[in-house]
Length: 242
Image (cartoon, rainbow, N blue to C red; front, side, top):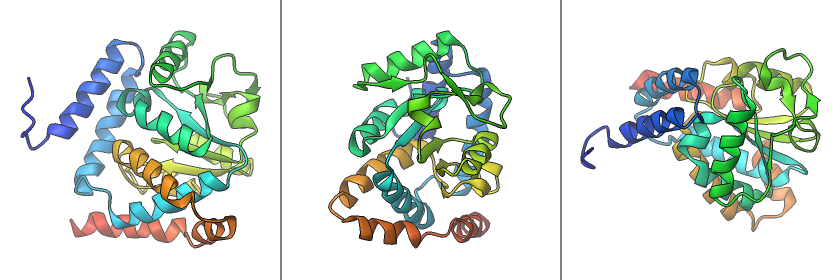
């Protein structure tokens, strides 16, 4: 039993959630390695949501509210770590949930769908993909017409460089959550939130609910005032100071 006063309590709980997700067939083996890489960057950020991350979260929340067909992409790690928050964000924004996996199998998709539905998701896209993203050869290319393919704004939690590049080339706004500010995902996305998904997704929910009272022009001003390149520079500066 892990004592809740352990200095690494939250981090260790996340590891346990991913291990449990792996045992259930939700998380891929490679997902455990990817989480460890991200965890290292989280240490460098002080394991807190920094001012630059909060700025990006606000811009991301505005972009989701402005989207005509926003979509939240879900993979095995996010399904294991923060399914409740993903469903809350979907409800708050009207964004569709779509399962998209690099290590895709019908069984994994079904299990992730069950997790999301158990948390209250009414409609989950991903099973039975009917379109492909041009320029991708991995299983991530498989998407649904009504979801990611037709989307104008896509939230991509966790590192996903090749698909982020392809989605941006398709003219979509991509909001990425990536603890590594130097990754291809972070550098390519429209808005990059350099933060842990377990903190960033709940913060997005909170911010979306706060911004709902604003009109379209105010939301456009928030979105337009964000510079991803400059924000990533701030994230790197933050890491260097520590």
